[in-house]
Length: 221
Image (cartoon, rainbow, N blue to C red):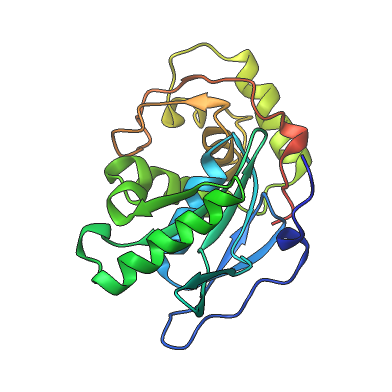
């Protein structure tokens, strides 16, 4: 896929009136500047989505004319997958937007469409989708600073045990992997459980998929 220069520039700083949040991204191997907690929460979903290759909040503005007046629109994210690049707009609730804001979004969407790039929306409801999001958030932030050896040992350990099992059963073993490496294994779907229920020590775990390979995970953060 052709390189998008937005991924190679430093992220923009927060705009006046916005709450700047630094999000530690494993996929991008850097901290991203988000303009709200909702944007930072969206990053967690992007980290979990194995189809997402990389993403950025450093989004170039799109210029367009309304009558004889030049306007601009700036999306919140660019998200790149293996198949496409999408611009993303984040809002708590798209049904309560002012007419002016909605018109600006529509114009921005039209301008991006002429370039063959879709603009997609993500709201509070779709980002913080109940127990599923709470599990992603817990697993992501409790699985940092796992060494490659630590993760490798965990991968080997979980490939040799019987399923179904649970975290409490695993840690009964005298040679069990670290808890944070288990959380990372669950987050990257090497271990699977019912995401619709809050994870606990007794949550039933099944053997997960083989994506991504443990060697592909940035464990330095």
